[in-house]
Length: 243
Image 1: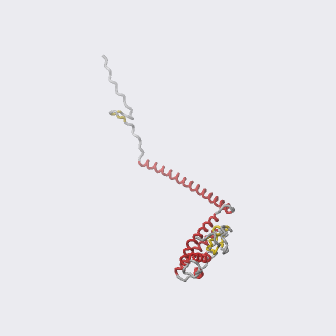
Image 2: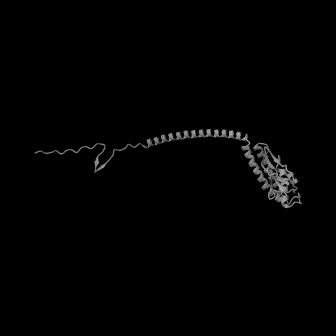
Image 3: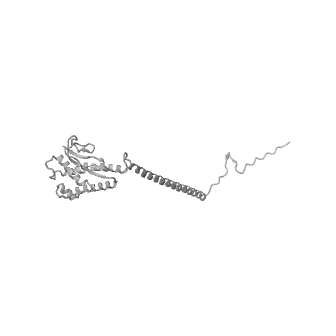
């Protein structure tokens, strides 16, 4: 009678064992905190180097672009200044200065004239609206020229009493005009205020326009504000009172 010897259960690999049906994987080596920190610092150092290098390249690129833009701007400005059919930088500046002159006349000069037209004996026989425009006419000749008259001279010419408030107002107007003259000079090109007009003639629409509510078909009575000319070109027309 033969007896079978029980077979031995196969040995499981040392790397794993069966326990209640669960399989356990071999442990994974985890770097120490010091090693992980060192690796992170190295990575950060590499990234910082790349960022600095990229920033340097970016700065050099924009410096090059800015230099090219300046050179192009200078070239274009030079070409524009040599052409009569296009407005160069200086012409654009004078266009803006002509606009500011118009605003100065229509707002500050007119406000002053309205306020003090009853305080002067200049043209007392004229209606109030016309007297205001006439006071403006005298004021513009004192302030809009190569060099504005002194505040004292303006006050005397306008025949206004020597009151501190009036003097302070004239000083403000004069200061604004001095600043305007300086900016006109800095803009370059040949500039002039043109006062030439003939009373009794009808408007020359190329160089004149009627002031306020005046009839543009009526003949010229007197000039309220001069024209703004640059290199002989009209940038702002004369303002004339018609009656």
